[in-house]
Image (cartoon, rainbow, N blue to C red; front, top):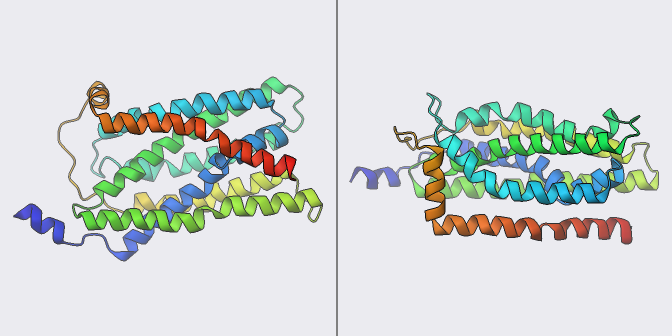
Length: 275
């Protein structure tokens, strides 16, 4: 009876829903710069890294990304603090994620005088790996919060809808701004270079975007009580291999990694072939 009444109560108000939605928008603003097919264009055309090195990195880390989400989920599930198991990550991650987002696109400015391609490749691999680590460390607890934000299924649905809707509007602005800025640079209508275009948007994503993302840690609450027992990482992997729907999701992510190459080719086609 208590559980039934609990599911009828609305725990999450409009302000908290908006905070959760804008938090996702801030995260997606920076994510689209990396995952929208423009990262490979940036590394090859702007940073001067060979295409083979870039494609190898994206493929390798894409496969790793499909595997490390469950691993990160197991680590987060073991977290026990007075703030909850999700909010500590959502409070702490935005700052290092902001720094790594900026550093990811700062290579051409930092290594402007570097003549060694090897140094550029090393910088690319390290900066992208660190960015990917902190992004996953924030993304997994963020979406886990959608299930912990309320025992009421309607609250959870509203939170997810808010996150999807607001991020669809605000998060997509980064790539819209980017293509306009690139056209202005290529046509000589302003004095900014392509590397400066990317860096400016990375700074916006790292400051304004991550300020929004931090709302998930400061303005949302975990209302679903966590279990007292801490599951081990090994237990998490045992469940992983026994859970067929979860295995299908992971396999789908692996296939999606290969399918994501299409967006890279599309970006090159429009930029380099059709200009």
